[in-house]
Length: 104
Image (tube, rainbow, N blue to C red; front, top):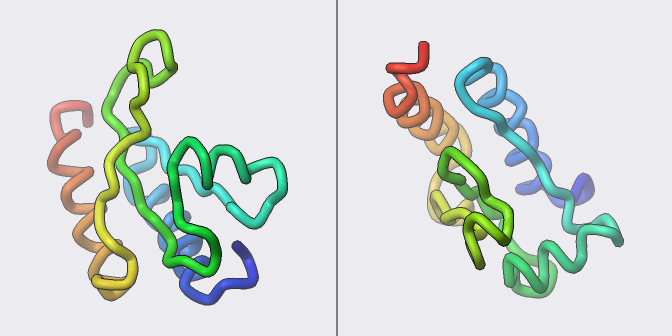
């Protein structure tokens, strides 16, 4: 959440990534400290109880609802505790730009 240092860094990097892939992909942030996010964070995505590292996920193109993709919750891109935030941001943006290059 906004009180967690690594979470603030991940949120800031998410905003930077959003600017870097604008028009190619969408970037979102979920604050698991918000009461209405508890079910998503701890039941659907099965995050460990707090405190935990921020989790960065990537989602495929196309429908992600239960009817079209049962049980699909994206894929963890990297462990935020294992990769320096600035390196993770740089790699994520480069991978996204290259993967979506034909959409430019």
